[in-house]
Amino acid sequence: MPYRTATQDWDVHRLPSAEGKNFLVTGGNAGIGYFVAEQLASTGAQVILGSRDSTKAASAAAAIRSRVPDARVRHLRLDLAELAGLKSSVDALELDRLDAIVCNAGVLLDHPQRRADLDGRELMFATNHLGHFALTGWLAPLLSAAPAGRVVTTGSFVAKSARLDLADLQVTSGYEPKDAYARSKLAQMLFAFELDRRLRAAGSTTASVVNHPGGALDLLTPSRPPVHTRTKGQWLRGLPASILLQGKHAAAWPAVRAVLDPAVRGGQMWGPRMLGLRGRPRLEPVRGALADTALAARLWTACVDLTGLDPFAQ
Image (tube, rainbow, N blue to C red; front, side, top):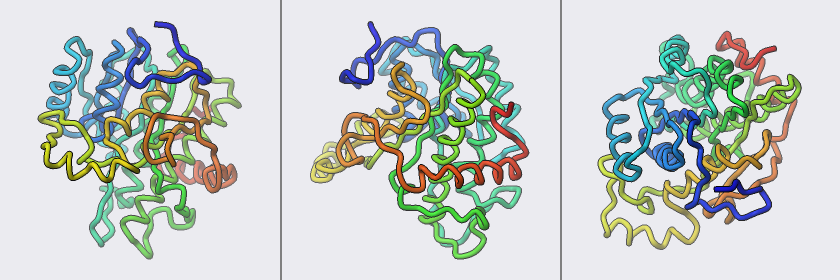
């Protein structure tokens, strides 16, 4: 099947072949990540599900194979909140190259009390951002070994209105769960844009691309037992919301295009076509805090200090 260019319509239901390629999807065992993995598996690529829970990953793999009988899918134990264990996870990949990583996994906590990882870092910032920052650093040689490696970072619509306090990245004061989550996603997206600038400056063939899924509801998400089950009654209750929102299968489309479309370029952001909330993926402008190169560079330096790693350092 010939590849399409960015000026042509991208058919989310007719994806180009990616046979022979290797894709890692963090959090690929559930939610939007599951549908990213399922759709990528349909292209003939090997898809690795990065997940802490081997049982859930096995269920996700079985669900993918029920839809894609010849799917090449496997599990990689990956806990983004344990920075010390990420190097051993990368070693366990046993690959000579990685064509793309989809940095999708994340946690959204609603507990009013601040929670921390084993090293005292605020848990959402540590998992959603620092874990992916460090993981990308360890994966750098494998991504560079691919002809055109990609780092695809899944941000969030809520990040566009967030404000990042570099003096308090760990949110030690004034903690509010939703704000902390939005800041962690803003940090992820700033990192992705800064990563691409550094890759271009170094002449790397690896590109860093941002996507966001828009608004996704379980009620509008098709069943994929045992990963997700939706009754007809739930689907009917979700119909009014479909005017503005979509299911998680559709929310996966921007990330999938960012991985597969050869016309996608580093430094771009892809999101749903309709108001950034639903619909087929389109290229979006990078504005506001997301375009703040000075903030992104300062954040990078802070994260190098926090993790001890400098992704793609030259």
